[in-house]
Length: 225
Image (cartoon, rainbow, N blue to C red; front, side, top):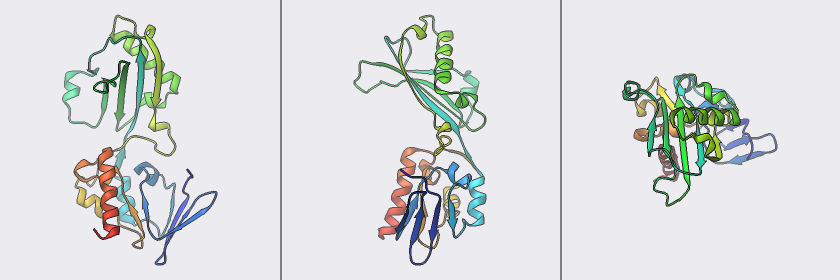
């Protein structure tokens, strides 16, 4: 629960610096979002290799959020896509989907989820929590005659774009589209500092399980498995 400001690797070990204290270790696995590495929030010694910096700058880290709305009754389908059929068929990272968030969860609650992510500008992601909820509910009022705003009981927002330690959703476009090529530009530093995360997820790139699998590969390598 502390912001890492610097990571110093030598042949003898690794020092991780935070405002309150420093931590010494034999090995360190860095799993911060790509956005944090792109912003240079952590000072590395030795510095990140030039090829790695170029690779990081070649990744588009998407903006996005989720909204969960609990209603007194259900008025929506299992899945609702608000974009045109043509735009929905385009092979794109951009996504805007309403879905029954209670589906298959054994719950009697009526919870509608909205997942939105975009590789470019996403004006909604810049709204405050209350503004975002109001904007989404107003959109639902335009779609449904039942006036969802009058049925709303509770709202929750997860706006990762406004979280200083995340600043978005996940990696979308890559200059190095091949995983092996991308993995090569994230070398270990001094054999002590290693990198893992969704961008290095291999066939499961840009997913939660891809992030977990990339970390497992690093740990297996460190343990000699």
